[in-house]
Image (cartoon, rainbow, N blue to C red):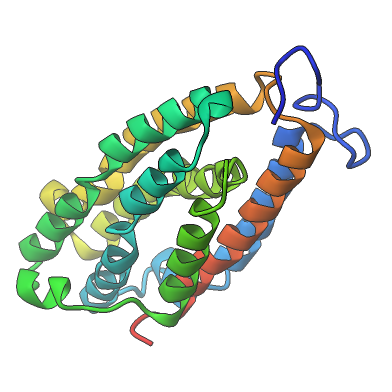
Length: 233
């Protein structure tokens, strides 16, 4: 990463002159293709999803969600003073995220699930891979590439979570307090996405960092879809 005066690579990159946001947009389209093949989301789309499907989804998501603020906090601790803006943003983000799993737990219990069983659960193979990658990346010096991870994860909250919640309510007749985790993230992650895009377009990102951001987004997009594919495994 460089100062804003030394590069304009947030606008023009080595990838054929495409902007960083355009490159990340291509990664998002790849993610959408993967999500369209996830069985539980296919059942949600066609209206055959069951309450058991929704409980399984929450159960599996919780095991990864609880790690979210932890890898962000680790990333914050590894930014040096030359990356103060990213360190400050990561600290703020970790503080905002660290209670999210309580919202998910409340939904699960409101559906009749056991909080004790939820907390005793383990990550599925996709969640293991996703969390392992994120913690390893966050342990690097100045892990600015994690902006790509946040682009994917926060983007899912901002763009898809409320849609999924509305569809679960439509098909299963759920109350608002049974889908609060997903509906909350439309607003919260929408704000996070706006903050992140301001950084991505600020001129602070050099070509090498832009490549790292895109690569991280690619990996996280694939692993996030994998955790949805591998429910309970």
